[in-house]
Image 1 (cartoon, rainbow, N blue to C red):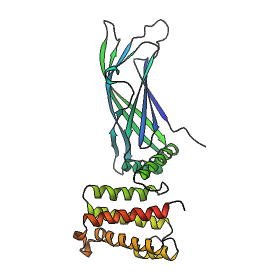
Image 2 (cartoon, one colour):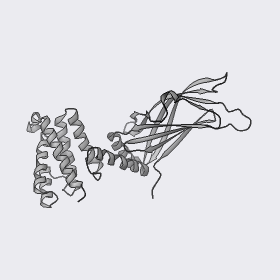
Image 3 (cartoon, one colour):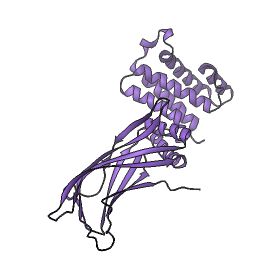
Image 4 (cartoon, helix red, strand yellow):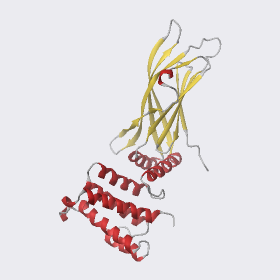
Length: 294
């Protein structure tokens, strides 16, 4: 069964001004669709005009439970991606009329991983969308008044929908670094961490994470868990999962990774930028060979 990927929540101001927010997954984050509805009041009540003033700012958080407390984790700020020109962006909404705006928030890989962890454990992920903007209430009348609103939307996302979102995001992150989309989230995360470490000059961390990504991939392809990486490489070589040349490359990553993972060898200082780049390039080559469609 294919479930709808979008989720929706709404809030009402002064019994008639409704602001509806919906979340739809994109390649690397969420598109936020906000609809402003000035619904007529019942009977003979006069429904005021409403004017929305831009910019609309905001951010998104989620709940993360630890043993001691419930933590609120900040993801990122939202970005206005509406088509309107900034100078024409304020909305005058007469009774019975509506207006809409679109925003975007990127979901970094570390939050993708944590959401998966929460969904697996709790069966649901709770997201909070915060919107800040000003409203001119009773607009174009002598009684008009400005309100500064802080709207907080709560979205309880069930695991089945979160998994659809995660699958979309993981494929995109894999494509960005030119790796097959079949690679698991854990392996991809370790490889991206290796690249990120390299980009900030943390070469020791880069080779250690490249080694970790390699080992997880070998175990995913049938190497016995708990064995040393040396033994796992030889095991898959004997099973013909790795050819002789690829196994040799894997041993090179193993040796690089040992520098970062085992300080007692006193080889940590020997890891250079070139070493780290070579370890990452070799790991990427091996991952592509292991997971590419034959």
